[in-house]
Image (cartoon, rainbow, N blue to C red):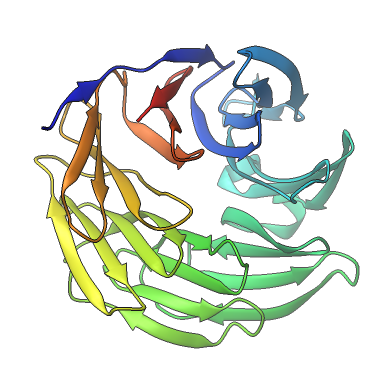
Length: 303
């Protein structure tokens, strides 16, 4: 029987949350208030804030930069962050054991980076709004490759847990699977989306996309199964469990979250209580899920 659940509790960030990383009991939340808020999500305690330099707006007034994207290298205090810079360009910072180092400067490098991910401890993957996918060597300070698989405007990319394959999406509705090491195209997933894909999730050879066409698309690469689940409203965010068995998407105008079995397509539960447009859906384990939206409330659910 289908039923709805409310969140167990919520955490309060400094600003709207646009990117999160969860490692065991620790949650890293990137906000539009110029900080990464670090919580123990189980004890509900704020451990620390990682702050970034103020920037100036178009009027010359100081403002806190929006943190667009963060990623963390496992079991190390090492975070990569994409932050708002001057004239709409982006800064890239590495935070190593609390020490902040600038990798790319918005004013000097003039890069429109939308997202950054770790490929290795000393290499990062970058994606630009112009749909360039790049692998950058932090030690050599050189690009290993720069690839442009499409001329469509970039939306999102994600890497599988093994860090071997990238899934990228754009306004074309096509999902490209790339070899993360070489940047070569492995596969194109198409036929289920007819419009922009806002966000991707990728685990155990299952790729899920959130669509402007109100479709949550699912591609199972091992079995070649492909289908979509339809919503009554634009789907802004998706998530997937580590084993690929379950996926979730933002459903309807009330920002509910629909969790479903990727094999049977059957809905397991509807999560109700999100207060604004969803930005992230993360399965923590087979019991908990954490979601964020364009407000300060980080929701913790038992699903």
